[in-house]
Length: 176
Figure 1 (cartoon, rainbow, N blue to C red):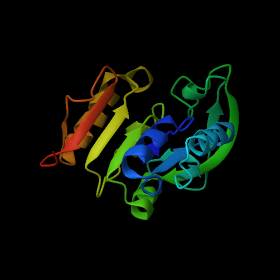
Figure 2 (cartoon, one colour):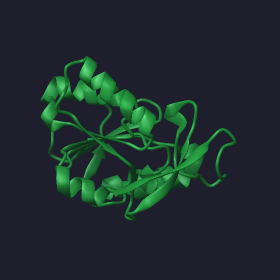
Figure 3 (cartoon, helix red, strand yellow):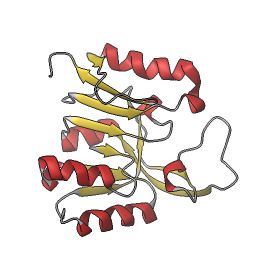
């Protein structure tokens, strides 16, 4: 499951490895979701499920989301407010607990521009591997520590293979 699927690149890579039917992507920005669908179709991955919405730690309904010209910088409102170039839209709120229960992923890729702080506090039942881009510029070193400690408390351990800079990999102990 790719949280913050963007243009679908990681969904396409995953579909190549595990098959399209085993891959789900979640993307908040409708235009970017359309690009992800086009990427997947152009590469022959018709069975990848794409969901429209912003991943949350618990709330459902709708949330405000800041769509920015650089799709990879689109995000929910941060502590500094909305950036000047954000167009605020309303999107479905998709609680991570609901996504996990419905789709039962074993691997999570997570690039949700700061929302990982709340979302990854959700019990990650059935997940064996988490790849997450941390955003300490949004929530400080304390927030980064909170994400890392929360994963460890759920039985995940840092995995050096694949970890680089702000992108970190955590594997559940015993899963090699």
